[in-house]
Length: 128
Image 1 (tube, rainbow, N blue to C red):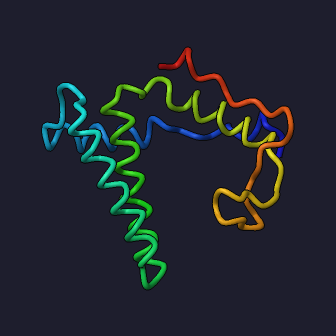
Image 2: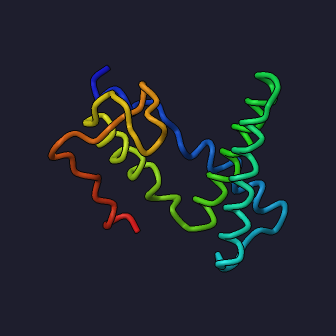
């Protein structure tokens, strides 16, 4: 798949609209504090752990959706709504420059990606 088609049709606004409705309903607004960051971190870890101990595909899917809710909720709360998609595209393009092979820092799973010689990470500095 060529990279020009790779990102067509992704509508981040659709996901973010759902998150904003949730935040409005529960009056989640104001400053994003270090305490909220800690809370959201713990919630995301909880969902990852729920995914790992899930006994069936339904529970796995539920955990992944809950993880996405906290992820996109954190994107919204941190004010990255306008830059998240552009950052996602840059990171994805940089990942496409990686090579398939074991990555020792994550247990050497054979289908992991590793950074080839000369690989450079994406520059996100203009998005924050």
